[in-house]
Amino acid sequence: MPRTTKRSNGPDSQADAIEDLYARGVTDGLPVVPPTLTRVERAVKASGRQPDDLIALVPPNYGRATVEKIAVNAVMAGCRPEYLPVVIAGVEAMCDEAFDLHGLGGTTNSASPLFIINGPIRKRLDVNCGAGVFGPGWRANATIGRALRLIAVNLGGARPGIISMSTLGHPGRYTYCIGENEEENPWEPLHIEHGFPPSESTVAAFAGEPALEIYDHRSRAAKDLLATIARSVEVIWHHKATALGDTLIVLSPEHARTIAGDGWSKADIRRFLWERLRKPVKDLLPGRDGGEGLPEHVLAKIPSPETDETLIPKFRAPEHLKILVAGGTAGRFSAVIPGWTFPNGSNLVIKKIQMHE
Image 1 (cartoon, rainbow, N blue to C red):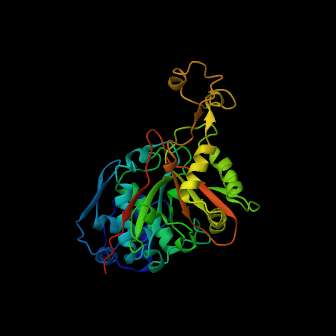
Image 2: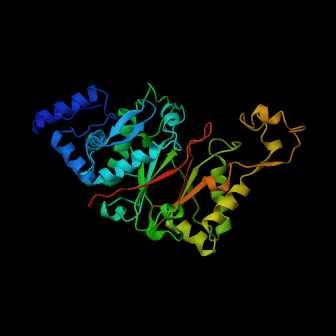
């Protein structure tokens, strides 16, 4: 964990500090902002908390995430001081037991914490919720997500190739943070749906793989569009995967308007996809039309699996399909982000952002 430094701010000393931090293994491979004492103190002050306040123990090594240590990583990531309350809430979310950062930290899967910001703070901090929402160009998205990833590595110990053994990884392991486009959402946004009032701001943590973009420019009815989405969702993990947990459906504003325009609610979307994605046992045999399938211990309880028509759902329950609206208002694209669901899965966790005025 990097210490704060009183080095001067001249160009040579800045470059030396960047190289020193990389050599000590506390960066993500990209240059970081040296966490000088002044910068860290400014960030701590913006949080309205004491430097030694303990926010969480960060799995898998259960390092102590004090406000000061969170601020050090936020500074290195390039965060403005006013971002610190959001970073703190993100730490609380990903360290909640229901999220299972411990399991995520060492999995061979590629999933990484995706942070979703809701509420009035999106405007205050200029969080991108619209065009290019998963891409570059917005400091808040880029640095908040990066700070939280640095915290998972520097305080949690999830170092690539040492503890974090992801076979492939994905770019979200640099930074993975978006805002929901609430202004273009025809339904309740994510945080209100989960019981928070509109006046509150929140951060949700979701253990997500890379986004799989879904293209449909022709469908003008909810049922047709959702049939396209269902076909894309069918292939996540693999086409015979069953008993999956939380999965994120990111609808673009145009697609959301098409679905809501036919009077469909989020519950209707979940029900349609859950029912559409069930498959009979006979189509889920390992080694037939693909190597994966139902586990042998499950098949052993079925008298004649080769002919059994019992429908097995892809998801454990419709509620595991999480739906939000994000992205630009032009373009009929949506996305599905598979969640990390092995063995019992990570659950989406939402925490309130405690603002300091």
